[in-house]
Figure 1 (tube, rainbow, N blue to C red):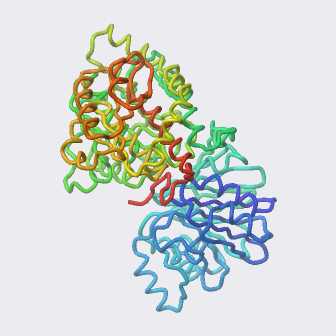
Figure 2: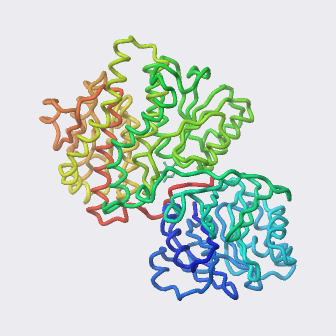
Figure 3: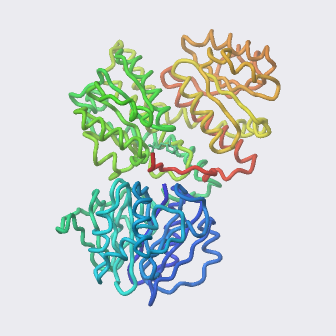
Length: 594
Ligand code: G6P
């Protein structure tokens, strides 16, 4: 969480910093600020969004600067707590993403040495530590300061009198963008795509010294070589392309995302489904770990693998798994993380690897921490996902899981062929759901005035109910709960009634009959029911208040079409309620703290 940016070159820094920050807002957006290095260091910051800051900011003259967009951890969103933070002299400014664990101790120590603190943040100790060690060489002072710091960080520092920026990272994302007589720094690639597609990824403990025409990377005082990479994402990928919100654009990109993700695996294996992406690792005894929406993909992955490969699989929340207190006994794990930066997931990967496990990371971000520390990487090809609510990255994760399972499948060869055909038809099926958008938008009007909504599903569609509820609550602020349909009567029934709609996800598999029973039970408690049903179903329509029809697919692929329908339902409900769809309050896209 939090986004940091830096610029040094020949152009005025302020507009570039603000533009990059605007693109990074998905990482946090409760306050923001910039520092520009002219004759002196000038700072402008406030507890507002980037656009508002840009509207009120005075013109700060300078060709180097840093910026920050915040997701508060230490201290409420306020002007004082917004970054950049300064030392006592106001000559050193720092932006930081991460958490300094020992900041209390450092702060007391620095205060006793005469340093004056003006914010509640953990970050503020960093410029003061740099000040303590500064004797004319910013890079050396940063290195000495970070020696005392425990925790995670990606930082950019500047000092008046030196025309260079110093960057450092440990367990926090940081990318240097390479330009022509100018260089950029950002937490993430999409922030810089307007200016460059050439990037250098720093490793943990690296310190970068960035000037307009040079990038030097040092590790423990010794210069190291860090290769330049070319990014295939385009500027358009990170723009709204005429859609009102990124979430809607990203929902609509899903047919392409499915195609691209599958095509990537076909070219990786060359023979398509004949070759396993996992090589000799296999899927026996797999543990799947993730957080948030990715955890729902993990849960669906468990159903996919158990159904097709017939091996027991466990899906766990990374944030819980990390505190089991015993060494994992399983020898392989798949971790799923869109960003590749989620702190709990990164901790899981490290923990599993230390215990000698083989860890496969399914991630969407090339060069992310997960991609650098896992034993094997399987990329999803969703392109940059900007909206805080994950949509296309989730569907791409499901594609990765199908593609992983199919080659190991123990099902009849004819059925396997049908499934591979079915998988390839999914882009068209998802397009059919998207074509039904206006009907779903109309239904969303009914939900928009509700306070509570339940989502129910069974089997492979139980995680879809969880995801449908998560999407609705995060973007529309309506309290929503996902439940296994059979469990609703064990408590939540007490909340049912005419003001509490239930969204029932009905698949054409062995759960169909019990779902019918569950829907009847709900109707008997007067709750309005919206059912997501497969086309051609003439039974459910008679029982429920409204239906969302999705195209016919094999039941194992039903989470794909059903989820897309629920994404649209959540999006339009939030839109009808006038919510800030792409940037829901209190949330952030990349959660880099535990
Ligand atoms: C945040 C995002 C969610 C995402 C979760 C896990 O909470 O808002 O959309 O599902 O983090 O992120 P990851 O990048 O690990 O998939």
